[in-house]
Length: 253
Image 1 (cartoon, rainbow, N blue to C red):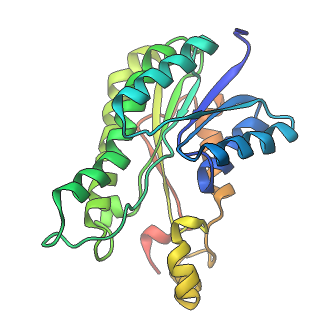
Image 2: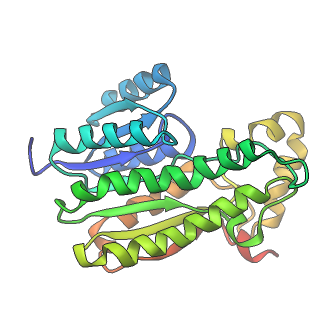
């Protein structure tokens, strides 16, 4: 274990924003541990990063599984001796359901995907973050955390509002250890998250850009750049913040 190594752990990093974040942190000089549940894709992504000269490793586990998170984060932390940056990127819509028809199983699934995953990974990483000289956790919330989401996305919005709150709560709890905790709130980013509407109603997908001040959809690299900043020492006096990465979308036009 080389104490000069900077280690970043990125959950849900086999595609979309997560992979762009992992790549950017790798370019910043981090050794990157990618997490996911698609092991074939994880291996492929590690190969891609390695080809660019980035030191990367893949750990396959489900971030909603408490035991799996605990054992894997512990294994990562013990292998490298510390964790410098934890990016709780894993999460998602999980589907759509109005409250009247919503099953308890669906409710628990979406809350687990977005809130439990953030809690489990953060809790497990804290002992190893304490060993870093620039430790931080970066979470993901959403505009839906403020506006409660569109039709059928109400529980997604609820879960992301909880991530906004737990970001601040963790920041308060961990400040005495110098561990910073912030969040990004991506707007409409052109990833597979929107694959269904992009393939079935491309004109609707493209029209979303009209509601964004900067007149375009976001790219994964737009989010990765902000995560890179929040992880860096340049952000050493920033904690408990949520940064909107949406081209002004949150204000409407």
